[in-house]
Structures are given as C-alpha cells and as structure tokens.
Image (cartoon, rainbow over all chains, first blue to last red; front, side, top):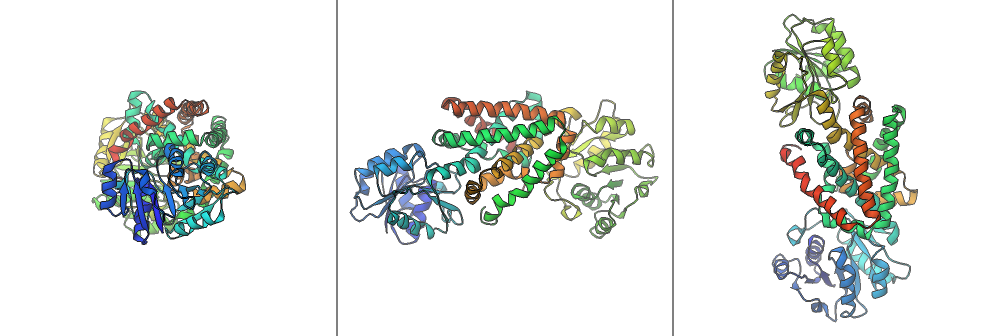
Length: 287
Length: 287
C-alpha cells in the first residue's frame, strides 16, 4: 500500500518502521528538517518532507496523523485540501470524543485510532520495531464511517501484531480516563503531596522511598504536556473518573478514621483479587 | 556473633542467609515445623526450632524479631522471660511508633529496626541473599536506648550492604506513611474504582489497561493483611497523609473542572521535576 505518516515521533516513527519492513511505500512529513533526515536515514520512511503537500500523491491509500493531539484536527483540515477523496485518514490521539466527530465531518473516510503503546520516551529516536506487538489498537468508527475505510485500517493493524479493539469514541474515552488518565493524575498528586512535606521530614522520606513509591509515581512524573492534553481533551470523562475515585478514597479514609478494619480488609482483599483481571491479559507481553 | 531470629519468612530468612554466610552462629525459631526443616536445609540458620525457649542460650548476643507486626510485642514479652539482660533485641516491623516505646519498656536493650526491603513475595521460599543490598535499613532508637545496643546492631547492618538511616520512631512513621502506606491505599482505591465501573465499560477498560495501570495498581493489589496492618499500626500518620493527599487531589480536580490549565500544567511540571529526588538515590540499585 501507499502510506503517508504526518508526525514522525515515537508512534509515527514506529508505524513507519513496521510499514517499511512489510514492503509498503511510506511517505513521511515532519515540521523538523532534521527529523526528516533521520527518518530517511533510519528507514522509518522511504521519503520525508517538511511540506504536507508532498502527500498530494494520486496513488496514496491512507494517511496516519501522528502529531501531538492539539494538531490532529488542524492537520486533518489541511489534508482535506490536498488528498483525493478515496484516501483514508486515521489518527493516533489518546482521546477520541473530541476528535472523531469533527474529523469525520472534515473527511468522510476518517477512522479514529488509538494504539495503546508506551509514551515515556519521545521523538523519532525512540521509534522502534514491535512497539505495537500484543498491545491493544483501538478503532473508534462512527455509525456513519464507511466499513471499507475501517477494513483498510484493520488490515494494516493486524500485521502490526496488535490486538484490535473496536468501540465508540465516548466509551473509549471513559475507559482510557479510568485506566490511563486517572492514574497519571493520582500519581502526580502523590508526588505533589510528597513534595509538600516539611523539609526535614521530606528528606527522610526521600531516603526511604523505594520500589512502591517508584512504581506508583512513575506515570505522574511523565511528560506534563501529555498529561495536560489528557485533561484538556478528555475533561468530562476524566472529571467523572476523578470524582468517582474520590468517593472510594473517602470511603477508605473513613474506614481508617473509624477503625472499621473489617471493611478496610474487604476493600484491600477485593483489590488484590480483582487485579489479575486488569493485568493478566497482558502478562508476559509487555516490557 | 551469636544471633537468634524469630520468624523465618522473607525478612527473617534473608537475614539468616546473610548472617550464616558471614560466619555468625544463627538460631532460628518458627511456629511451623516445616519452615524449621526448610530453614536448616537451605542454611538459612544453623539450627531451627518451634520453641522460643531454644533461644535461652547463655552466649546469645542479639535476637531479630521478624514475625508479622501483630506478634512483635507479644514475642518480645515472651523473650523477656527467657533472655539474659545483656542480649540486644531488635524488630523489623514497618511501623515503629506503636512498637518501640512499649518494646523498650519490656526490654531496655531494644532497638527498633526497619529494613526497607521488598515484601511482594512471602515466606521462607522467598528468602534470598542480597535482599538488603543498597536498601535503607532504618534504626529508631529512643533517647533512653543504650548507644552500645545501637552500635551492635549498626555493625551487623553495615555488613548487609544496607544504607543505615537513624531517626526517631514517629518521624519514621510519618515518612513511611507518605512513601509506602499512602501509595498502597491510593493504589487499592484505583483498583476498587476501576472494578466499580459498569460491566460493559469495565470489560473494555480491562482490554485497554496497559503498563501505566499495571504499575500504579501494583502495591494496591498486594497482600491485604500487610495493608491492613499498615492501617492499624500507623493509623494517625497514614490518616494525616491521606487527608493531605485529598487536598492535593481536590486542587487538581478543581483545576480540571474550571479549565485552569496553567495551574494544572504547573502541578504536572512540578511533579515531573520533583520525581528524580525521590527515585534517583536508588537508581540502578533495585530490580
């Protein structure tokens, strides 16, 4: 197939590496000339350009928009001026409700996508083969999305080794708010409350912090721009998840305050018992 | 030295392995005959018994009480009937304020201790060499604790490769509440709120849960008895940490609700910037 990729960071670059390996013809676009050079040198794409008009290729089949979230819609709007109407457009943004309906208005053959792949490292340097292996790759078509466009994308994804998950944009956002965006906010608040300790006590706590603190604070210590974008673009779903979480935390706090050890024990036991349902499906599949 | 260890689980067993390796004479006590057999077979101790009176050895120098927290004080009380007054007693409980003053009344040569070593696996099967390597080992003497007892224990600890940290029991409990017990409670509530999602949405979320959810939920999915003991024995400090955390979480929620993106960005940026102070001291030193 003839594939365009706009934005050659971790996700766009990793998609390019896979598509080139699989024998597709891949054109890349990046705002940075240096990124274009690196992309060609590393065989992430066959040809890279800083000019979006380089994708005005009559034989192009599909374009992946892999820019930061805030540039997804503006990029699709620009592409709509350039591409033949037969081209499928998809994106990789981690929120879908704020993007898919508008993008579908701009471009009927738009299919929202979200590969659930790691984002701790950034940039084309971080691009790697097999990033999508055994990860969920979510597609969020609307009832109006042509099935042929979904099939085109689903076919490509199946060759990435991803687990294809199809749902509507708003269910996606609620699920992702709970399992990805909420943990980031909880984890950031853990760091912020720890940092707010009186100095002497904080220094002692820093000496004692170990693997439990390290793991629980990992996603909260990540890229703040990404965290902010989650909040801005997934505001209602994240707010609902935060409020629900606060209810659970208040319940636990009340148990502790009133010494209701049986209830607290039940909560901790349920937590332990439920965790495999959230973790086991991926066991051994992630680094 | 002549060393007694009461409780041959992960911590007691790992201490035994180290002390035997270092050429000390080690006696173990466990309630389970099977554990005693395994302890001798694995050279965790030289001799193991189910009878605490087996530690009535005239030449004994020090006893490590490595039972579950709830048995720490009863064990010290029993030991006080048996040991010569020259023997140092120490414990490994993860809370100190609820134990050290009472234990010191029972036994003047008591020195509170807390090796900050992993607790995900349990039992003598999990005992291992080098568990304490580069980990903090906290001692919490009182002003009345004889320096000779602290020195005796500190000498042994230095040969474990641990980082010795000395502080008072209540500073220890406040620090540990923040960096260990609070993360467990936050993490358990994350699982409990995720589990409370409507069924269809929960199943979707389970398909999408990835490394962020896995890491943030790890300590909350651990041994509920240990979590309950943290709550019971470190109640005031944990409650203070939980209330302080709730203030930070409410602030973040308000930022999100009111679209105060600048403030939210500041919070996330501070979190990212502060994390190395909590993690870097241990970098590369933990699995």
